[in-house]
Length: 285
Ligand code: PLP
Image (cartoon, rainbow, N blue to C red; front, side, top):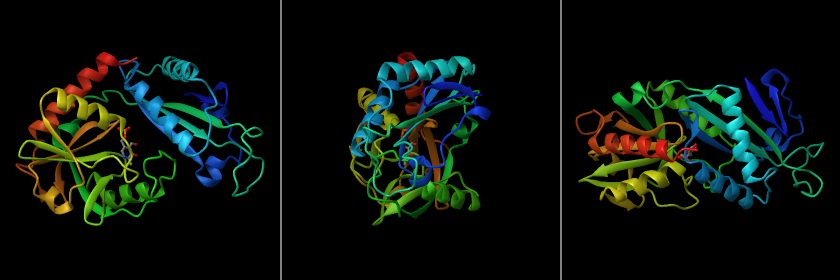
């Protein structure tokens, strides 16, 4: 694999990041994951906009221009022959040359940047989407700025491990009885034809796929309610699903062992998945 590190395209074996990089020592870094279908980038402007928001919330600058970022994404996709897959981008506060809690002077220490690809043949044609995911609920003990896409992913990783141990596909975080989101995705329920998903705040990541899916849902005259919903409400829902850049729209068929509806992916989730994949392919760059 060819990866991109601080200005250079190099084989992954030759890529180097300093032990003093703040992304490594302090999780002082933000990231984006953009899907690739048919060699093209999905929702790229959205991911770029959110990257800028994450950087600005942390007082960081971008190490390259937007035009360069798009060019690097495309270059990596081409160099690695990615048809279907992902591009991972990480921007760190950089390498101050020592370990210190205070931020280095941005005029002296430049942000670091790393990109790599992951090949996922048949990404849009997932057998999991035909079966639907089963999830468990776990307490949301993450920090209070979940709207910033930082690389502090230890608890989400632990959540995925709890799900794995329980023999299911993912975990939904619950805070004060209400679902916030999944370990790496936004959560939705469908009740009486209404699509319900938590409203945007610092409690959840502002999903790029979420924004696109809600737009498509409204365009298709579906009713969308952006509000917090309880775990109990979710277990009584007709259907449920999650969205993320890498899973698109994934039906959820079971929560904490409680089967939703018939236990098969619901019509709303299935329809939104088809619309999302079709429309995003059309708009891909
Ligand atoms: N929520 C969390 C906690 C995530 O980590 C992610 C994606 O990584 C999402 C939601 C979905 O965001 P997006 O649709 O932009 O991938």
